[in-house]
Length: 263
Image 1 (tube, rainbow, N blue to C red):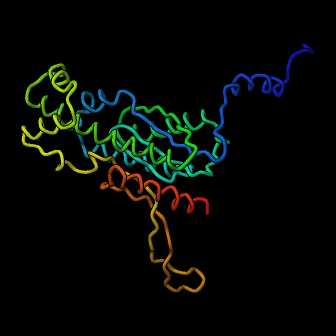
Image 2 (image 1 turned 180 degrees about the horizontal axis):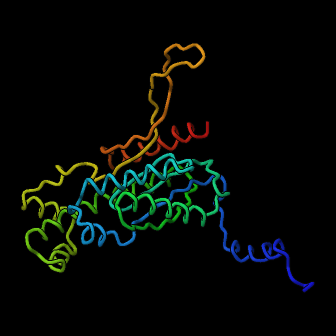
């Protein structure tokens, strides 16, 4: 059997097939990962029966999952959560996995699925895709897009579940809302005693997670004197701004927090 390949020869031969489709994000390009829950409508409304259209228990599980992703070895500047999706903005100098897309997609989806499943007590899965954004303005546009999507989805969800709770079927409620303008949906809610402006901001705008500095009392191990140590922690922001103000908020995060990570 003199012609039989050694392990090293087999390894070199077969890894070509495994890595042939590897694509790496070029340096100097921002990466934003977006994770979506798979079949979460059925999971949240039929299997687990969370309160509709929003449930604080589900929100807190999604926040905890986002936090877990932000401390799992990646340089994440900003996490944004709305409904059953999570967006993560990486620092410009993020270098994990040599910036291979397949590694980010598979690892982030696995991390999110594992964490959320543990919190929920049953299997739940996420998919993941990476947006490659070549400048700060496109990063701002991305998060404005998701922020405004949150508002549109919240309005539609409140309308749908208002009709459902009035006794309409899924088909009737969906048909009633088909083609309705934003103003007409607001009027529908108002006729049922709800002003959409009074809905909690986290439901209309999503939740932002970012790093903040804080002072923590500590003791100098050498001198034994009391000192103040600077630490950082993740802040969950339930009162995000909207539209242009939100864009400025994201822009400041990219510049200030990005510099802090690079330092």
